[in-house]
Amino acid sequence: MASVTRAVFGDLPSGAGTVEKFQLQSDLLKVDIISWGCTITALEVKDRQGRASDVVLGFAELEGYLQKQPYLGAVVGRVANRIAKGTFTLDGKEYKLPINNGPNSLHGGVRGFDKVPWTPQVLSNGVQFSRVSPDGEEGYPGELKVWVTYTLDGGELMINYRAQASRTTPVNLTNHSYFNLAGQGSPNIYDHEITIEADAFLPVDETLIPTGEVAPVQGTAFDLRKPVELGKHLQEFRINGFDHNFCLNGSKEKHFCARVRHAGSGRVLEVYTTQPGVQFYTGNFLDGTLQGKRGAVYPKHSGFCLETQNWPDAVNQPHFPPVLLRPGEEYDHTTWFKFSVA
Image (tube, rainbow, N blue to C red):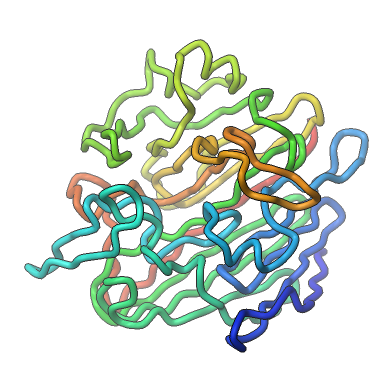
């Protein structure tokens, strides 16, 4: 069983409303989620000694989330990840999106789903957030009704995303939590052991847009099908880190995606999803300038993301899994984060 408590987290500037915090608690996990961007602000997990640590990067106060920061813990949309040159064509019409990441549009634009208030509804074992994204918001066509539901069951946090559109539009929703299983504020993730259940990945150009090739992982740095220790692996292959989409099995049912183990604490995170891809990101752009919770700073490689989602730039790459949502259809995807100790 899980309990849910709600409290005020902070007030938005110029009387724009109050942001609430919802704490979901089971015997194994304690998760804090705020109504600004459906953001996970804290996630406490016990180690093998039974000591709880917060394993997500974030801020103690609302001001932290309102500043320029790299989507810590937030839900991103209308379309997660990058869209090449911020343009796509739909039914013969060209749409132009805000350019906010080099020459591309990233994570829904300048004011994406991470930078807006959501309407909360408390459930018996979680919380559901909803909002209506108006027609034309950040350049996207059609009104989009969105529901994001967090529920807690023992050591498993489930996130369900649903959406309905008034006009055909691309939709791709994910959560951008940065994890460090040693505890947030630990200097790096090099001692984490990672496994990703993917036979292929998407190579990218210099602006991080997929080239269109679906490349086998076999014999490359991207072969994570057997566990690798991250620090040694990055050194061995002389790479700066990961910021790539891994292609999961094509099933729309729940399937295993990734497993991360931190030997020192015994904490294990397993990710399951209905999505066709996961963006594995190793915090390459973190630079130590953000002041996090409890005086923590977040240098490069101090957290990792496993962003379950459709493949990046799918709206411009017809051989990628379909990303368009049409009127009368429902977007419905779920991801499970399962914590345990080994």
